Image 1 (cartoon, helix red, strand yellow):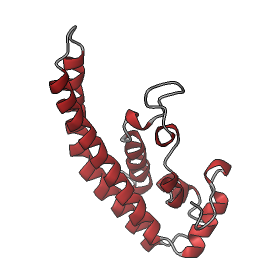
Image 2 (image 1 turned 45 degrees about the vertical axis):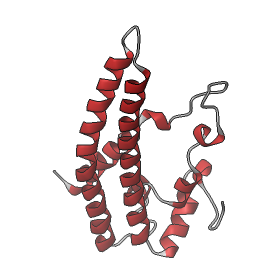
Image 3 (image 1 turned 60 degrees about the horizontal axis):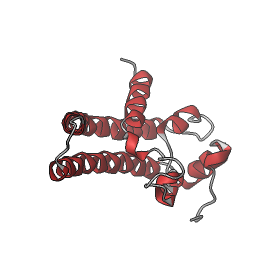
Length: 160
């Protein structure tokens, strides 16, 4: 496979790896809290791989940076594959348990805890990759990416 195609597949996989629980629940739901309604603000301080790929010429990405970013993405993908298998297996078990007419609350909550723990590990690995990618970029490249990214995701350095 060509490196750019592999990079695209890795990116697609990583963004698909963000569990559905990260999506907003909607107004009026029991989970209708500020943290559940919006994309976490801290993600505005890192750069998605596809943004870097799209603007690699504009930011002057070097081949060494490209290789380091590709390596970080590949390492993350390797780590996430096992976690995704566990996540899906435990999710299926939880679904099976919840499908019953009467649900053992303790068992369901214990299994849900396992699922959410794996989900947190997935998110942590994804964030680790985004941090590694950001650390490969020079400050000028980061500033240029902030200008180039879609309007809704722009931020100023130091903005909370």
